[in-house]
Length: 451
Image (cartoon, rainbow, N blue to C red; front, side, top):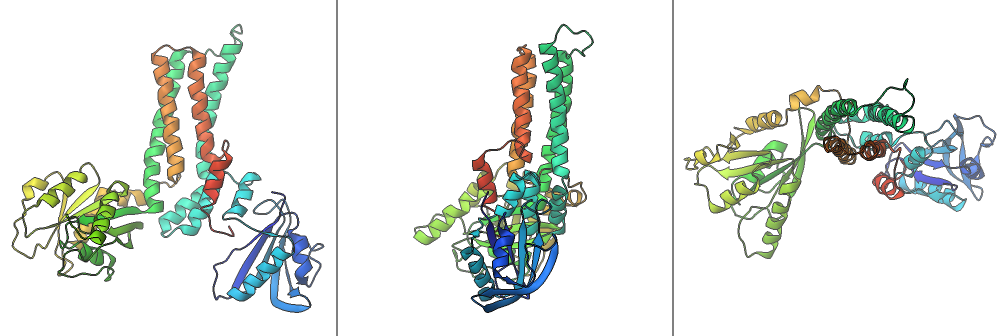
């Protein structure tokens, strides 16, 4: 991290201003080469300086340059931010000049990566930065802000401290058994503390899955045979004609996506190609893609035609979605009903007609009920916020279960200690106390450039 990096931090396009950000020990020196105004190498830290960006005695733009000196900066390195007039040509020209004078174009998320590697923020705060940028609901913003303020870090660090305390007492007992004034850590005492830790960690995991819904939304798949009204239901939910609706079977051949906000939670809705046997190559690809999405969806809406009896295809679809979060929509209730409802008793059922909005509000209410959205909205947002964190917590829980198993099997205390240390290290991966370069690189490459 000895080089100086640069990137455009604002969205490209026409706007009032653009910001080009540099970080590194040569950032002030490089900016000063192009700046006509005060000597940037002599100005006070955290000041904004008026002047011009110059190239070969030509004025490129009138600018304001912010100078922030190490260590009290986002990356803990010297940072310069050039506020120029918005527009692609001017912004790119200044970026080009900075690179020609010694800066390197930053990789995605490299500014935040440096903040993490330099110890200014932990890994959960790093992830919260991007979560805040990408948040689309007020609840998602609150989740990101909580994590950015260090609440997730503190929760995990406090849990790790409990494990560290237990490990310390075990070590003392192993190394200094002759000292009678040291608290004896018995197997029963370890078992009691591990039981308490397990309950606490399981609660964190359970609540974190709600937070994942708040942050990422509910991936909702609309599936069914051709011409049962899937696209019409998508359009009614979205309140717009997003999908083409005709009486011709197989109109939808690829997925059609849309978003709505329901109780401050985002629903990512996907309308799929109708499920049926077909010889049409393009339609067949659409059907295969539809089926492949079943396992990835948080919610599946199976649409059935109420004016027809259940077909072989209907029954196969219902079998595929068994044991998943599913709502069965019996559509076309305005027609004479022939569907065998007694075969659908194990499912959540909503009846609709897309001639008007009848049943659509009931469908929304059923989603709210199924995911407990009214309660989720009012919960404390101080939990894990993504799959990476939750997966590591689940692995940590498994290690605590291994400790309990070891105790039950009367394993030596030093063998039990190994699983306890593994749990401690896995929790450390959540906040970045322990990590591999590959994991860090993979995490930050998903960030936007300039952040």
